Amino acid sequence: METPGRRERKKAATRQALADAALKLFLERGYDQVSIRDIAEAADVSTTTLFKHFPGKEALVFDESEDREANLIAAVRQRPEDQGVVEALREYVLATWLPLTAHPQYAGFTALVSGTPALQEYGERMWTRHAKSLGAAIAEDAGVDSDDIACHALARFVLDIPALTRGRQDPRNDVERIFDLLERGWR
Image (cartoon, rainbow, N blue to C red; front, side, top):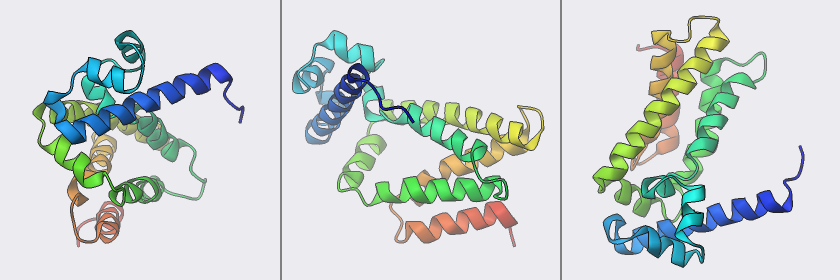
């Protein structure tokens, strides 16, 4: 794997600084009380620079969306030959979702998104897009039509796991139970 050059590192650092500043301000003041200008100033960049990295205010909250979609698809396409799709997605969710639930800002982030209609709508559009891409990757892997309903249903179920397990007592156990259901069906 090639190490990113200085320019790419600077772009990534600026993007991260913007996302961090936005989340900090949103958690402190509330989403609707923070302007794009406030975020740019907190990250010490211009609003033009902010818009080079993010299409709008909502995107600052879901700053890892593109990476997450690519990683979900990679979990399907780059899994070991002897591993099934459901098991690969289980490993991905356990490795990525559970650590987020332990993050100190997790409760605040969840309350922010849950309490802000614009963020709820944006999040739903984002997850729908992810479900379409993941469903197509699962279908390609299974050798069926890209719009296969079972493949898209599996993608939606997997993507709903964070919402289903959010705030629950034992999220690891809940994630495992959901994947057991997906793998073995209802008993």
